[in-house]
Image (cartoon, rainbow, N blue to C red):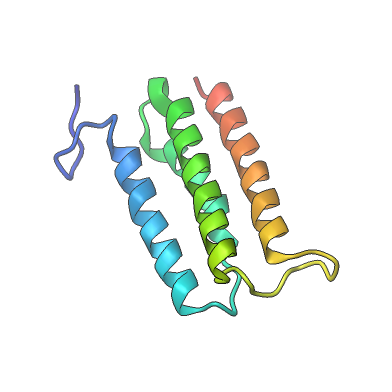
Amino acid sequence: MTTSIIGAPAERQPYFAIAGLTVVWVVAALLRTETTFHLGPIILPLIPLLIAPKGSRTRAIGVAAGVSAGVIALLSVTGNLSGPAFEPFSSAVAESVLTLIGSGILALGLARVTR
C-alpha cells in the first residue's frame, strides 16, 4: 500500500478529491444561483482517471458520478440550479445530467483503455 502526499492511502485519495471538488461546486452554486456550473458534472467523474490506482478507477468513477447526480438533484430541488442553458429549449438541469452522462461514459471508456 502506497501513501499519497496528504498521508492517506492511495486508494482513498480520489475520494478526498471528489469530496473537496464537490464542496467547491456546491458552495459556488449556492453563492451564484444565476450561473450554471457545468464543470462540476464534467470534472468529477474524470478525477479518478488522474488520481486513482488502476485497479480501483471504475469504483471511484461510479462514486464520483453518484455524488455528482446527488448534487445535481440537491441543487435542482433547492432552486440553486437555475442558471442559463446553452440550448434555448433546454434547462440547466437537463444539461447538467447530459454532461454528467457524457463525462461518465468518457471516464469509463478511458479507464478501460488505460488498464
